[in-house]
Length: 185
Length: 185
Image (cartoon, rainbow over all chains, first blue to last red; front, side, top):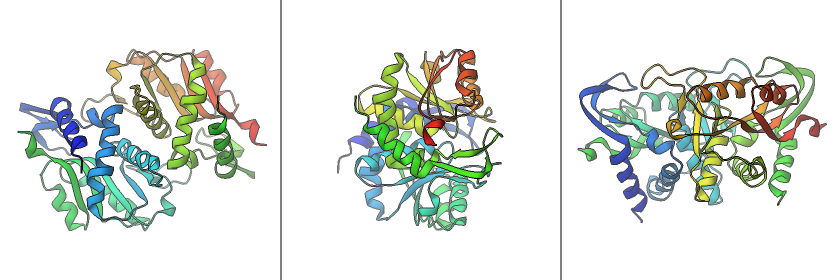
């Protein structure tokens, strides 16, 4: 199994994503921390996003022993990862549908909270960029389960090791992360 | 120049995207019409999205005579197109950055309305799935121009031929569409 994708990602994570500051940052979860990770430096950069998708497809997902027809999570952070993984499988001749879970239901039109071919999906691999408390991942999981989609496994770039994966496990979602916060200091 | 991508897309558009009804549909623009196009049947389907990106990259964008470093538009409709085009150029060794324009600025964090590497971008090709009045495309154009990005050309899947491209032209944005509504009836 090639580690080259993970190695390349790890260099980018250290150079572009991770920042340390004596004065704490305020995180999306509302918590404060001296360790800040801006994973959009990976997910919104064409070269890094394509390597990220290859890393998930070749090095992470094969170990999960899961049959799934879709990948998706809470917009906006999960979107580039879901699209890149979906297009990566497409190159390999396998249809994995991207699902985009909105934070709220949409006003007009079908009014549901998931964009994509969710009606044809039995199992979805939930995705997020970073998990701290697991809150945003769990929000997506609940919406997906509400329409009858089976969600028991998930992937993310970084686990901040602050209870997120444990919280998700109590909700019967096993999260696999490429990196853990403690690898960076 | 191969027309195969456009031909394949046209079949999908007729089969999955276009619907006609005696009782009018209500469109995202608030207008009503007997002709409804759900382009998510293309943009959220892995195979069709990858062919859509190839069509733009090989058959549409080369005719626009434009130097650009990014592609993007208003979330959520523009996102899959921007990511797929960005990853399509990445395969060809060219870095085209995806930009995601939020409808509103974000509460926490940097608080700006564009997600992505907008600070490094001189010219962005604006993208949308459907244009009716051109309103949502124009919203993205204004946000992009506000941070100093040059936007004079755009692409979309379908022009409903209801004044959108004219409205955009008065704002100095030339829109090129793969399909026009009148091709479908």
